[in-house]
Length: 373
Image (spheres, rainbow, N blue to C red):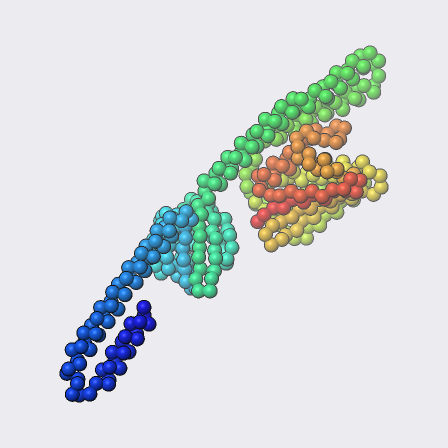
């Protein structure tokens, strides 16, 4: 259409330049009429395009505002160009006007986040919201997508609590069942002692009483209320636990590799209980094999996580034993309660961490805990 109008305009100008003076007055009115017609056509074209662009712009705005995520578009200098309705609802106390800087929005909303491209989860004390930020950079603009995940976090926490209490209910039921074996043994030993008066049965009675006591203690510990998140030195807790074991088991070679100072936010008691039971399992595993025994504990820092690695040259596990590793009351030990790994599972859930187990029967086990930053 633009080419058509341009051609007509060139033709009219060419005509005007080619007229002689004697024909000028005669042709002038016709030339004006043609020029006027062309201007009207061109104006109509512009009007239609303007209406089309306005319709397109209105549709774009409707879609932009209907998106469930908050969207903010900035230029390459971090100056706000456009924001949708959801973004204004999330930043309810900050006027999202054209020209506002991205850094100022973060400061005024109490958000501490990297401005580099990526996905981040942050908490704003001023907005009292958990937010997910998705920052995307193009050649000449920056897009910030924001999701309010406050309710999702609450729901996740409630779900974890429900799952935890359901597991504790299962543990209580299993604990009652688990008491039957040591109580039966205790009763049998008592009856045999009454009949024979031999000290051997007294020793057996003491063992069974200790087993019952340990089972009750570990079951009660599972109901202990967590202390909440506190910042502490991961390596210090690991070193303290290892120190106690070294004194008790001098025949085992404990190797600790934690040259990097690592501090985490977690529940100290729960973390200590988890690693205590992991190392105790390793001690039991290496004690069942002949030869030199070693247990390695290594901590390391990666770009996005921390790793705690436990390795031993014990009896290892079969694939079936690995699958049941975290199951309450599952144990391969004669006098084990099967509750130690429940502390580990509770810590993994509490910390939103990951657990990896590599084990070969009669070779050893490597257990890794991955804590995300």
